[in-house]
Image 1: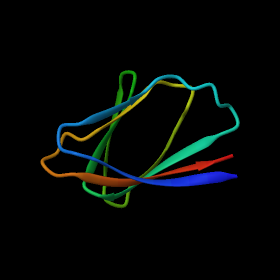
Image 2: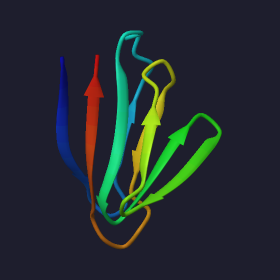
Image 3: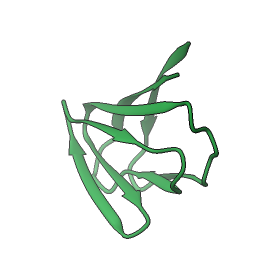
Length: 79
């Protein structure tokens, strides 16, 4: 079972997620267009078009757009 979610973040916006206790799920983020900043506590990653990253549910994290245009990405959740 799983899901693919298409999403976007407008310029200057952030989406914050707290710790989720879902040990049997795996999440991947694929940037389709733009630049997405992924923040995990003190760790900051800049993803651009074509980049893919696994993100964990058991760590609070933020999707942020610090660029001057919208960013489009997919979130792929697998169980």
